[in-house]
Image (cartoon, rainbow, N blue to C red; front, side):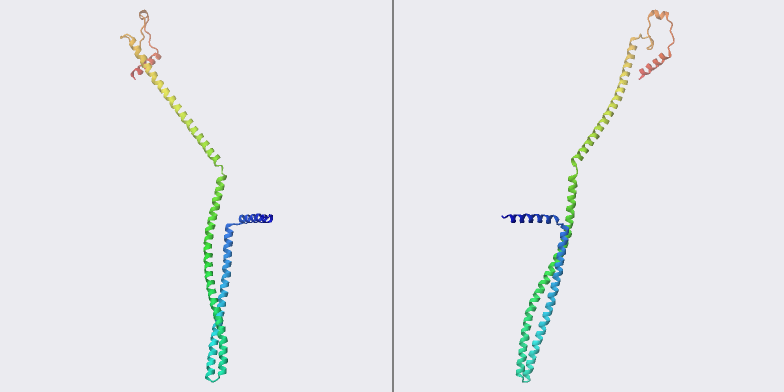
Length: 259
């Protein structure tokens, strides 16, 4: 391969690439419809011209046929009048006009076929333009949807999804940790209250047991709340009235015994 051929191919490839990148689908569709409509206008003009030519040829053919009939009548009239030479001239003119009429009839038939084909092409082009307009709207809608999808994909790909999800996970861990702390504090408070009440219940049992032990150690005639003194002290010591504090203590003990 020659150097110039390679350069030509490279230049052609680059030009085609630039053209492809510069093509806007929506604009290209509009341009295609515009060109088809221009072709439709030209085709309509051609059909109109062909129909006009057909009508003109048809008139010429009819005029020639009518003139040929006229010269035939003239020839008959000349023969009736005994004018054979005049009749021969009339027939000669009829022949010339008839040849012209025959040529015009051939042209008229050709023009008729041409006009019919042009009309068919006109109908097909109009149908294609109508279909193209419908497809254009559909393609424009698809282009719009594709652009929106592309923009959405670009936005999604540009988002730092991993970082955002990691932030959500960190916040979730913090919330779970805070909940665990609150639960632990609640359990500690509940445990402390239960311990205090258990201590109170345990202390009451011990006091009851202590009071029962004291009662079992005293003589039967001695009251529970009276302390047994030695004999010497009983003879020499006079009983003293109980202090208010001792009385309150005895009342409290009595209430505990009744529990």
